[in-house]
Image (cartoon, rainbow, N blue to C red; front, side, top):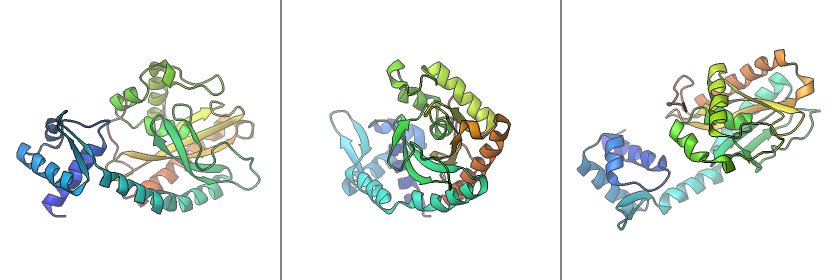
Length: 259
């Protein structure tokens, strides 16, 4: 890849990772590029519609053309297409239902579900949103985000939605849950989304190491002994690693996680 194209892509990636428009100085510092180079690239992106300049605030953010790219991505469903065969093999391997979810703010959005034969229907239908801090798939992704991003997603007690009366109700409690996820190498929940059901999950990552999706296995809690759940979790971890490879990521490359 030519250096100029690489710099443009790095700049777009940096803009996409900001929670709001930022001064050019922030991008200069983050990218380690000369100030003049960053301003030149920003000018080109603004002219092409991929960035927008807010002159009163002296800040830059993503432009409408970037939104159009994202919309085209969703229309083509590449993530779902890549994940479906992985989930199908996972369901065949464990005999339980599985699904794929992505983070959307502090919720997860379910984009693929593979129902195991004879298993009951679940709340995780495609298009359903659930609180990320309660779901195994959400926790698997939150555990790999920077601490500041997790804190921004859950700024106060009102952010911690309750479904069944159990689960973290504060940032401190959530951090302890995420520490456990990183320690064990997978996420889990038991009765926190739906009473009587449990899930285990692992995150799939893109080429930057960012967690782009959570793959989860969900089962009736009474059907699987606690001693057998790590085996289901290992299957989910292997499936997440397979999807990571299909996305062009490295299963061993992880970003700085939440502390």
